[in-house]
Amino acid sequence: MAQAAAVAKPPAPPRRRRVSATPRRLPYLLIAPAALLMLGFIAYPVISVFYYSLQNYNPTKPWRNGYAGFDNFVHAFTDDPQFWDTLTFSAKWVVVEVGLQLLFGLALALIVNQTFVGRAAGRALVFSPWAVSGVLTSAIWVLLYNSQTGITRYLADAGIGSYGTSWLSDTSTVFPAAVVADLWRGVPFFAILILADLQSVSKDLYEAAEVDGASRVRQFLHITLPHLKDAIILSTLLRAVWEFNNVDLLYTLTGGGPAGETTTLPLYIANTSVDAHNFGYASALTTVAFVILLFCSIVYLRLSKFGGGDK
Image (cartoon, rainbow, N blue to C red; front, side):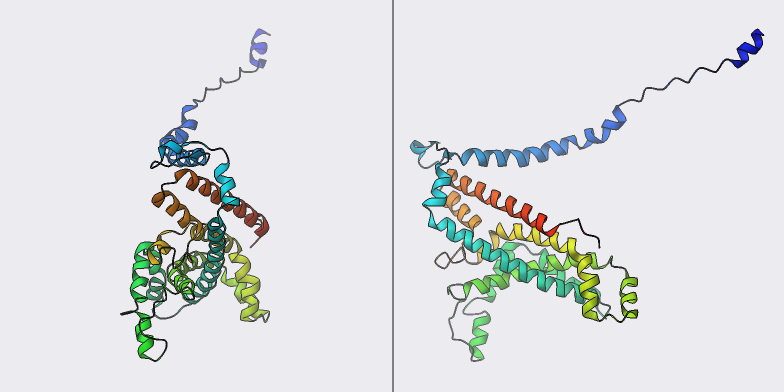
């Protein structure tokens, strides 16, 4: 009986090994130094800008420095007409540039996505301007727009226009001239992202559409565009932010002129801080620009329903 009771007794449950928390925390520990550095490089400038936006800070006039409260913001919205002029031009610049870059970038992506002889060379030629810096781009186009050796001279030789014409110094032509220069560099950005997304479209969808008798236009509207929706939304948002903050090209190409015709809000901020040394007011303008970009980005993503639609 004792032996039977010993046999019938269930075995003791195995002891659970205590799992060390170190392996689970190891990935976070490894990325912690880089995360702290990024946080420092991002958080400190943002916090310092918010701090100086509430100050009167001009190193050349230290006797006027001190706490200003919201005076800088009030001055921007009520007593500074240049702020509204530059903000209006920034909006115009973003809408025109992003719209045209998207249109031409989509067209180029559809072209280089086709199979033809020399496609690799064609893609390299299309994408190469994106590798050029903004300052170098503006230097190239300054030479092209030169009144003595540039495009206008050859047009004058052909009987179009007159000699000595400078498109960058004429208020009626400086905006389209600057738009064309930035298009040359910005279109490849859209072409690259859209082409990358086009590569993932299943060929079976187009074959099925052809069997059903769908035309090329209907295939583009009902297959290609829905598939490219998220890529287009993301690329336009990124490019809009970059174009709003565009300083290097316009500063080198036109310097904000003539007569302030091509001065964006970031360029006005740069002039206010670097040239006028009014860092308090420039910080307030930067804060306003940050809030505008944040608000517009949130509204744009909400209205476009980014990531919420099925391809």
